[in-house]
Length: 354
Image (cartoon, rainbow, N blue to C red):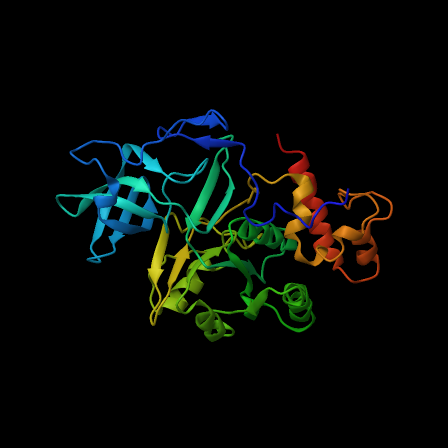
């Protein structure tokens, strides 16, 4: 039988495991009953605790801004805190939490609410756990740098897949565009234009000349957005320009490969003047896609969707099968060759994952 068009796309995929209240993995079908609250320090019902949002995470400290008062508390996580998010980082920037206020502008996080959107990746060294970078965000600003000799679209395509998995809208930004000119600038503009042709918003930006900054500022207005990119692409410089301050520390890049030195060490939610929030995260050297089977990947390449049902053999991996409609569309110039190359590279990485 021919399969329906990706029933599992965008959150309709069952997870293989869950996490109990003590953060221990348990198989589905054997999941324990998790209490909504754990009685400790005279707290028995988390619904009665103040609600707030995590606005900064650094070295085990979680700063929470309370909804009712706007007060900011430096919090730690209570042992045995409950969560509505399975198999993932317990508390991240953007999370809505229930907090027990303590003396000295401190607090204790008792409960983490369900995330409506999130950005996650494979957690290195933590098999079966998703490393969530930010939660409850609207836009993922995927930043690349024009001055990087190792610019690869596969990195952007990984970010896009990660965004779609977490129900976040991706935006592609080519920063430091002032560093190139002439034919090279035209070539990079063409590379980025591919994403606009398949429905993703794109921008060319420079924090030195101001190119594209006003368009980016308008896009971020009244939204919660997260910046993502490798070290040295200028995320903190973009944040400082949008905020009109030197809130985020910036650093030099190595001349040999134009790579950064991880100047951002915390994940912070910053208030945008006029409305909205911008989350700056530490630079990433790699972005492993979380809990996606190789056969599911084609559902996250939007330009493939019109061709999936036309393949001769279903399911089809679009890598070698005869009569593959996706490969035929690539040969006909209807699907970009670079995006298809990214698909093959990501497919192989998912296939080889334990």
